[in-house]
Length: 181
View 1 (cartoon, rainbow, N blue to C red):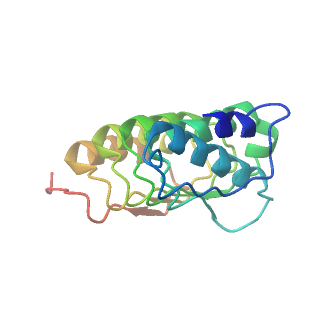
View 2 (tube, rainbow, N blue to C red; view 1 turned 90 degrees about the vertical axis):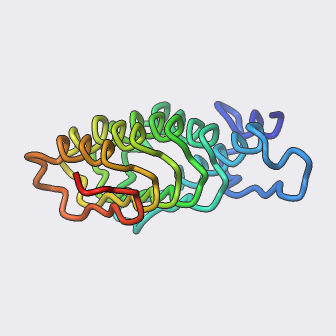
């Protein structure tokens, strides 16, 4: 918790972009995930316009770390607005973290690509993304939600959101337990 606090807010260390705490007794805790989220937010702060996918994958963010990144996106719009392509794949994120990110990502006016494959966002996470990002974005072209247990209900929410959204040209839903409804 002390390390995460050292990275957050005014006067915090904004240059620390990666932190590894694996092999410690507390490495699988919310405090470790919050720390990973703070480092991921710092990584995204360094994004420039027109850059390729800015990926914060494989950082073990979970829901707590995703909430840290979402807080950064909401609190620093002048730098967050530069983000055009972001990846959150392989982070152990569930519906709660996805919802926090969806609400923040929905405010990014230039978001073109969002990769969140191989998490566990489920139907409710997919519904949050559909409501907050897909249904509101005029720029989103690629959404990758493969391997997230989205299921039929998540697909229904996405289907409702993509109506009339001509900017979306790629939607990846492989390995999601979709039954054909």
